[in-house]
Image: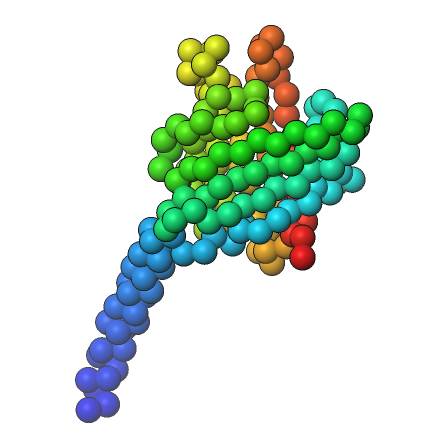
Length: 168
C-alpha cells in the first residue's frame, strides 16, 4: 500500500495542479469578481502627468454581467470643472464606445489577474490606435497604477502614471 501511495504522489500532485489551474481559468472565464471592483482615488503626489494634473480623480469599476466591467472616471480640474467618461467592455479586445473622452473607442485585454491593457482609438485617426493604457493592481490590492501613453489631435505625445488608492 505504501508503495502505491508513493507512486501516485507525483501523479496526484500534477493532477491537483492541473485541476487548480483549470478551475481558476474557468472562474476567470465565468467572470469571477475582478479585484479592482470598487472606487479608487488618485494620489496626485505620487502620480506624474505630462500635462495638467487634475485636482481630483475617482475611478469606479463595476461588474457587468458575468464577463464585463464598467469603468467610470470622474475628474475635477484645477479650475473646478468636472468631467465624467465611461465605458463598458469585455476583456475580448473588441472596440466599444467611450463617452465624453478624446477617444471614440476602447478595447480591453487581460494580461494577468492583476494587469489589464486598454487600447484607445479615434475616428478622426481612421480607427488607428492613438492611446495605450496599462492598469496594474498591487499584490495587497490597495494600490492601482494606471500608465497611459498616447498622441493628441495635433500629433503631440502625452503620458501619465496615475497612482490610485482604494477608497473605503
